[in-house]
Length: 106
View 1 (tube, helix red, strand yellow):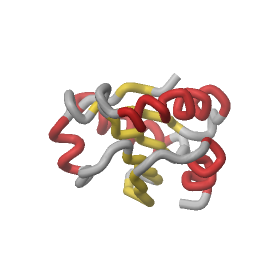
View 2 (cartoon, rainbow, N blue to C red; view 1 turned 135 degrees about the vertical axis):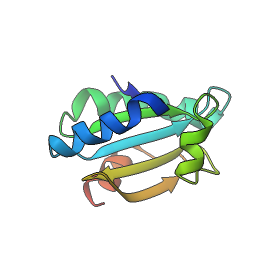
View 3 (cartoon, rainbow, N blue to C red; view 1 turned 90 degrees about the vertical axis):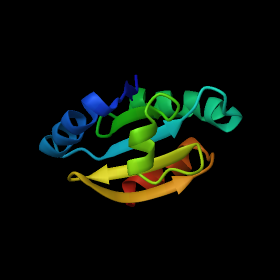
C-alpha cells in the first residue's frame, strides 16, 4: 500500500528511503482529479509488487505547501527521489510499465 505523506512525515520518509537505498516514487494527486483516480490502482499495484521502491502519495489539496515546494502545477505528477534528492518528475497518466521504467531509469 502506498504511504500517505504529510508535511510532518515527509522528511522522515525521505531519510528512511535514502537509508535503505530505495528510490521514492511520489504521486501528487487530488481526490477530484479524474486522471489521478485512474492512476490510483496503478500506484497501489506498484506498491504491492515493487518492494525495492518506496511508493508514496501526497494529496495536494491537504498538503499545498509540499506541492508548492515541489513546484507541482499539474496532477497527477510523479516525482522520483533518490538519495534524498529529486531525480526526475513527470506529469500525466501513463501505464504501470511506463511508470516503473520512469523510476528505474531516473
